[in-house]
Amino acid sequence: MLSSTHRAVHHAAHRADVVIVGAGVSGLAAAHHLIAAGVTVSVLETAADPGGRMATASVDGFRLDRVGQLLNTSYTEPDRTPGLEGLVLRPFGPGVLVAGADGRQQRAGALTPARALASGSLDQARLSAALARLAALPPDRLLARPERTAHAALRTRGLPPRTVNGILRPLLSALLRDPELTTSSRVADLALRTFARGRLAVPEGGARVLPDLLAAGLPPGTVRTGVRVRSVSTHLVTTEEHGDFACRSVVLATGARAAAELLPGLRVPDFHEVTVIHHATRTPLPWDGSLLLDADPKWPIAHTTVMSAVDPTRAPAGRSLVTTTVHGPPPPARTVAARLARLYETSTRDWELLAVHHTPEAVPAMPPPYDLRRPVRVLAGLYVCGDHRDSNTVQGALHSARRAAGALLRDFGIPIPAHPRPAVPAAA
Image (tube, rainbow, N blue to C red; front, side):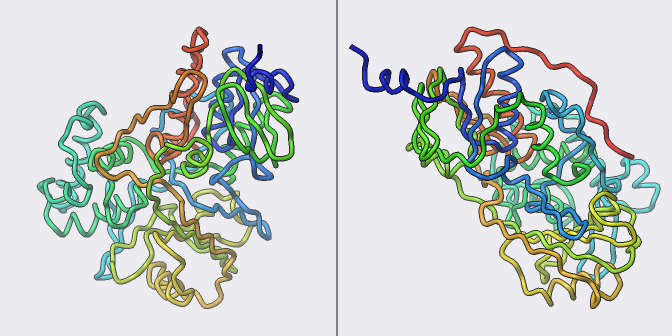
């Protein structure tokens, strides 16, 4: 006699080898890896569009990212993910600019130790040497270091307090989206290593371009939006209004909180909140494409840039888009405008406020002890992926998708396909 589960599977309205719940970057990437191995896939998404937190709104010709993820040209996972062949990265200026409490701005992380010393800055030379050492270390060596918070580890780096507080602290805050630096020191070291080996960058055309490319590269009908999943098991996904989906396996690729609601027992992490503020200028604002970090703790801004100088597609001709990130809730608009006027040394009275995007759960927190390779296989037939299973970056989301797909294919007894291709191009 068939069990109730098998009877439900037998009468399910839809069938695929694998059902993926969630059409964010991780779910879409997992679909690509599985389809490349010959597995049939259905991707179910609650929202009206795929992409998850990698969302970009269009307002009067401006393209406005919601969470403002920073990518890096040294990321390896875009090269290993089918569907991202058309991705173009727009890098920021070398290193970062840092605005100190004294009003002066200095560039950090862009010089070799020798050139930094030749420029007359011993502090810059020491910082460049520390970053160069991190860049040369294999990840396994960094992961073997004693683990503490990033804040505690800063005191052990052998750098003077003015360098730690004036450069490293705001840099790590930006890379980790963690102003208190409660993140694992191992994660922080890996973030600095990535920073030292490449250039910070954004996708040309907005963050949404990355999931749009992934979705467009899947077979028609693979992604179904507006589908609210009610429950999951290894062989069946039930939805509220779209029937049941029978399958051989399920991949949960939602955010951490939604995954725990569907699979009780999964841990829900703490989160870091982020506010992204977009201003439009009436005339072009001269800028060299640098990311400007604010090291003055009296002000709420983490970093800002003239985003249209980095990626000209994000603003109409003749105008500039200034994108500013705050780690926390939205501050008063006047406070932001006053600080931006000082940072850019110009009046902001005629700037137009286009949008304020506040995301309370922008990224999962990664406090120590933190496992950068959290299990993606719950049991045979049930898998979990997303930035809460890896690092809380686009690199981590894509890597967790590849790990989950690999675990599933091994359970299916299917060889994992390779995906060699040229590196993702970085626009000059």
